[in-house]
Image 1 (cartoon, rainbow, N blue to C red):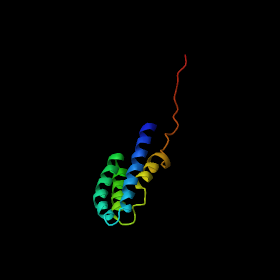
Image 2: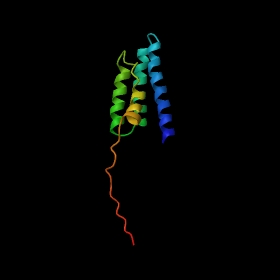
Image 3: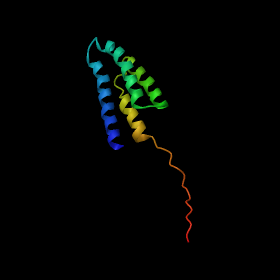
Image 4: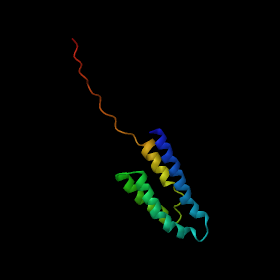
Length: 101
């Protein structure tokens, strides 16, 4: 599972770099964002299934489409939220009964 997490982190960094690259292209950058925003939302949805993937895809779409917000590394933040910061609930302790003879 750790190897899979590393692949997702590398993908996240790459997608964020591509999203930020459009800021470096004068005049054409905002128009490229119009193409990049739906693609980024689709990729976010594929990387993170379920409710959090839906919400993250909406957020990344808005982040990419709005001017001046390309500096937010939304893919990387989602990776850290999913695999680093979020604490899973631990199961409550169970009592296992063992019979002895």
